[in-house]
Length: 114
Length: 110
Image (cartoon, rainbow over all chains, first blue to last red):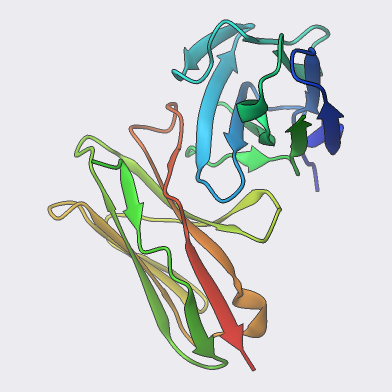
């Protein structure tokens, strides 16, 4: 069964450092998303990406965040200068165009900022 | 007002019990509704979509009341493996981001 894969599964970084989280969406999917979940909190939308551009972003997705799809398969989330409050599980998700809205999530990348 | 509200639980029920979860959403323009399941420290996984007429999938039944902006999930004959957090999820349409509730935790006890 095709799946969304994410790397790394866990990253520990110092405050102020740059972090790149990587995702390989399901191959025939065209809509890509990043969500995050702070421990004990709800899953929150960060950004959606379609046709090589951001289609929607939340207020969480400020100038410290960026996304790109550099090579047609990887979908990356970059945090330029991490803060303590960026510690969370980051989930990548993808959806097939014309779907019912069902998202397929990766297993997540846990980011710990010290 | 929170966009999607759920009773956080936990619901502790014995095996074989029937348990019901409720959810309310604030945006009356919402068009798509789902229940996701999330195991501890894992990703959310789609349990079932929720249709206006209500729908059933095995032991799971979902209902939608648009007038009251209320969604429910009924689990019959609970199994130990049903222990998880159940997330109520809505979106304005199939193309818009999902909005998650905080989830209701279920523990099924032998």
